[in-house]
Image (tube, rainbow, N blue to C red; front, side):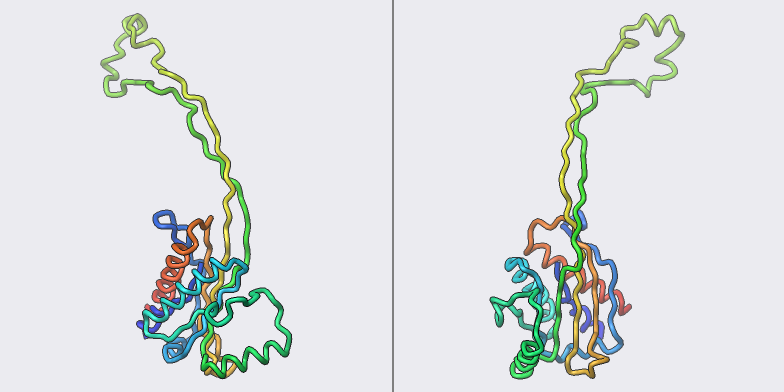
Length: 226
């Protein structure tokens, strides 16, 4: 069961920027029957208008499933021109169900961006005296009496050269991403088997982030089992 859910996740999608933790799992949940997904044929869907991100995340998640022995297929291989945010009519939903049945898919992993916000961050460089010196290791002996100290050259300014302050302001993008997994072989009220909500800060390398996100989600679900 643990093995299943290490798998699990594949769940993933868009954490941790190598050393700086760009991806953080905020919350995760899995049902008591989550291990049943191990025998399923899972279709992986990333609902985003960005085709590069869609391919990267679907691939990363599907790879996690496959690594853990679960059959999985990226939806872009089946629906390269899918409109992720298109509202499906009753007829289109009927056709989609028929497609899943005909292709033998009885598991679904859907990842979607739930929220996006922007913030600004200002950093300062400079604003100090280069070459300034002081002598903490010499006191109190170094200072001695006032008159001796005051007449000594080292009592004068040792500020050094002033480096002017400069400021850099950048915009930080933060995404809240949710991955949901369904076991379609179960009754409708039992189909939901896992949900992982994550925060992704200022993603730059989509492929790298997708891979790290998938592993982060897998780790989160693995911890749930311990």
